[in-house]
Length: 109
Image (cartoon, rainbow, N blue to C red):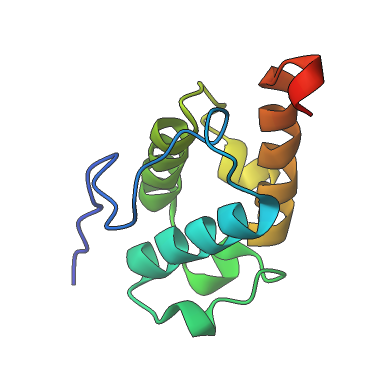
């Protein structure tokens, strides 16, 4: 069975720019969990944020698609190896939170 990845930015959740909207760490983790669940065709409740995404069967095609979704969601360019460099939802969210914080003006932090 061949699974087709969704198009970048075609995620059913609301697309937002985290840098301009006050989306917090919990919101980002929830959004990432939703994306991963969609790609894996599993309920969000089955996604443990501490389990490696590859252990769930997330392959390189979906990892690149997820990276594209994240780029669209955050409006920033990211490394294509992002999902492999930060292999769990928790690690990925923590890294992305740091990137978002670094882009905000000093007074907005």
